[in-house]
Length: 130
Image (tube, rainbow, N blue to C red; front, top):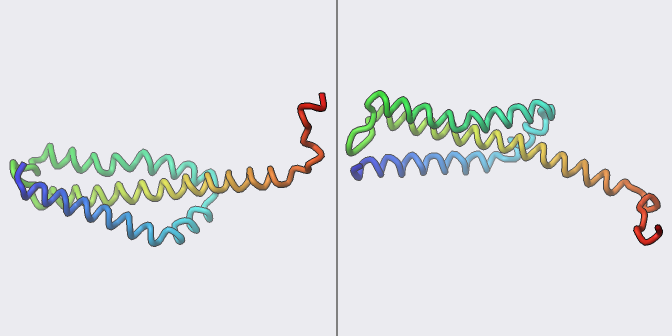
């Protein structure tokens, strides 16, 4: 593969990193949205988004490969655009899926901490009392 190919790859990769950084800046809104969603819906959406994420990138890659978008030294413009958009979709799906999963984990951790703190000391048995 020629130099043009690697420049295209590098630009796409930088765009994907930038998209992730932009989503991180909006993480407060993302968390608020995730916590506002019912827990069962979060679990389902998280799983769906994690499964969808690789599909969103591999489908354009397959399409480009099978429809002649790859030349010996570069990607055709339409192919490069399609792959770049697929990568952005992949980043978005993974980020949203992770937000839903983390919101569930944070909720479970909070619930277990509240349960642990609420237990009165008198119900805790010392093994040496037997």
